Image 1: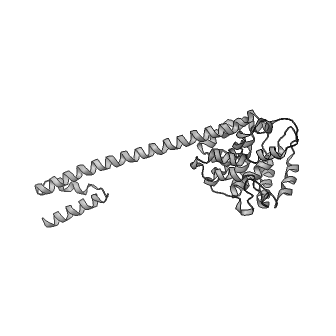
Image 2 (image 1 turned 180 degrees about the vertical axis):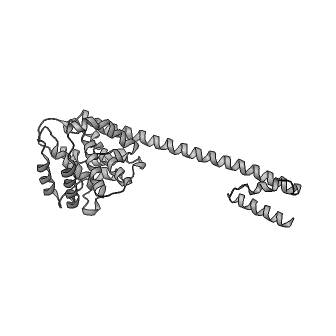
Image 3 (image 1 turned 135 degrees about the vertical axis):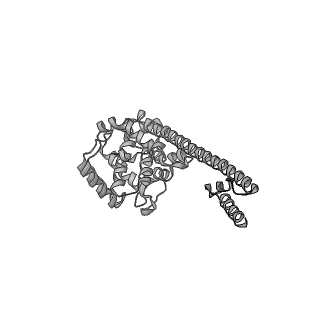
Length: 286
């Protein structure tokens, strides 16, 4: 009798610690005294109800996680759409962000970075010029005019404007830093903070290389797009001063082996690439 009581108490203690089992049901069977049976039945019912509530809580937590992810994706979709809409004001900007994102991801993959970091780089690249939404119309003018000091100052504000837009979206993580620092240079002559060398986050340096290459190879009202060979020569001149030499060489090797993105390729892939951004499907990237 005392042995059964001690075993029953031991099982109840395990249930109290969250270690549920059907051992308690043994004491509901004939052969045990009435008190032990009633206690076992009560504990068994309590255990079933607790397990049911815990299961429901797990379901609610998963539903909340999915809703939270959906909310993040919708917010990111809105911001990415705004960034892409800059093309309505500037023909050069149209498609630029998505091409830079594709180039940046290819370079990040070549460097062997982990998938989560590649995703941050991709997001930062997609949004790197979102601060240009605050530009005046004169910045987007198609006229070949000499940039005044005031105009240059306005242009140099776009990384900080981008951060101001994105800073409350804490789920973007380091991608916001890549937006902030993508115009910093190794020698400290960049903007907006004048960071030097390794003070510049790697993700921002990767976006910078991709940004420079797309700028060099894209037609503008005041500049003819260069071919890959010419672009490589320009990147190498910037190497060690503005851009990290190892990133430049890795990028050149990537483009040599797998090619650059043409306007036609971009036009066909915009919708798919934006959708891939939202579902974080890294395997589908070029």
